[in-house]
Length: 337
Ligand code: ACO
Image (cartoon, rainbow, N blue to C red; front, top):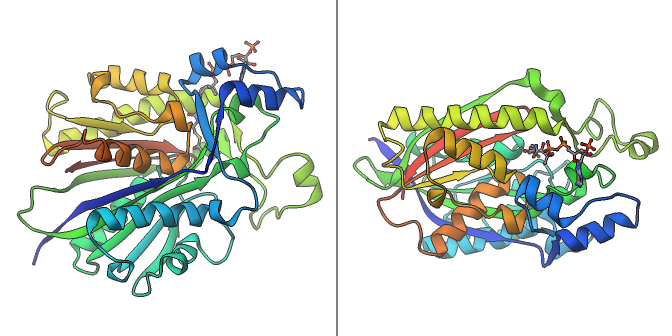
């Protein structure tokens, strides 16, 4: 028996606190870090972002993910007991052990599922969706919950003005279900790749087993994000264009016939450069970067959820998701809604 996998529900959740560029600039100025709304908007397209309240259990990464998952379940008409598999893409888990997948399973009451985390930074959600697609098509799994959720504010280096203005916290989730072999609504194709040689341009070096967090590591902010922005920019434009083209070519869908493009939301200038290379008009590009910032693995599922709930994405339409992240990791996934 051949199966397909299709997305039947989406959900997202954000911390209560939204911080505008002006508010962030004021906050950073107290520590002698200079920035302003005009620079952030012009160089990134970001206007505001959400930050979790440190220590508030309602805004832990897994709690935001639980809220997003409940919304996705409701849209799909499913209960937590229906979930066979939870794949939780994150690079900012609540705890080193257990996995965020297990925290989410407990909070959701998904007692029939097996749960795991997947670490591929900003590409994590697409890697996870690809994994769920394969598990469903093999017949092993009927219903999968795929999550991309981050509290990046916990990993942000607030002394580095070129990176600290970029990030935000959010959770996105989708329900993926088994569909018949002749289903039009399905995940059509996906392509993943990584290049570990490029680890240095975006990394957090301390906090793992090589260099556990120490007072020295904390002092040097070695447990925070280090990024070579221009290098990341260059690789992002190249790989996003390349992986979008791979997916469209394989599915024999022309750029004109594509209905929606959801790229990783890191920088509006990256997105515009990629859309131009691909000949995709900006009115087909789904954006939430302006009000969320870069939420890593949560950017694509939260943008998807917003577009679905606004009624933009309609049954039978094609949606191309395209990501890059630390690793470096890359990927694209094309589906028909
Ligand atoms: N406010 C004001 N000025 C700033 C700021 C700021 N927040 N940040 C940097 N500047 C200054 C710099 O000091 C520099 O000044 P100088 O010319 O006097 O030296 C000037 O602005 C230009 O700096 P650049 O770094 O060249 O600025 P650029 O246009 O490259 O923009 C940015 C920087 C926004 C980081 C860009 O390179 C970028 O978006 N890169 C990609 C980042 C990205 O996509 N990250 C995603 C991955 S995240 C993940 O995977 C978790």
